[in-house]
Image 1: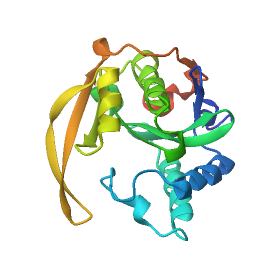
Image 2 (image 1 turned 180 degrees about the horizontal axis):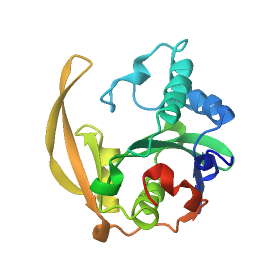
Image 3 (image 1 turned 135 degrees about the vertical axis):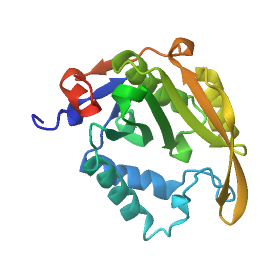
Image 4 (image 1 turned 90 degrees about the horizontal axis):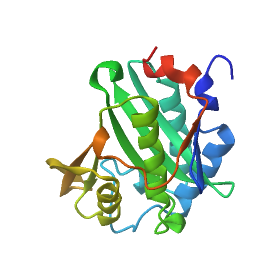
Length: 210
């Protein structure tokens, strides 16, 4: 796409391709959400979007991602990449920033269909966007967070070199929830898998870079 080259941006690892979603990708992503993302007794998200009814959840997923794409600006952007494994959309991995040319800091967030968890794919997809951030965009730091009752996400962060960066307290489902903030410096990151970036150069102005 000549006037929106971000749709041609691809990140590839040995098992995954990450890309901004097409409409068909969003349809498939909504299916993954319906199939389940986490134990219903737990809520790993600050905004409990998975509590929506089965009738509302798919449309919510599609509208959210279309909104993220429509709000992209060089000064404030969010790349909600879908992760594709063996030709199937299995989840989404976000990389976002505000005033990136000055802050050189990115934020990551993700979710993976429950049927695809536990095989290291979550680590691989986050490694892919961190490689984009550090090697492709020259970020200096990356931040993330996870609630203390989400050990899987915290384990991925430890594996990739993040360090604790304080705690914050939130209300989730009417209960007190403590979140661990995490920070990763450029020099502390070594990708556990090879990552290739395709089609980045024409996208740089959309990240606020010349």
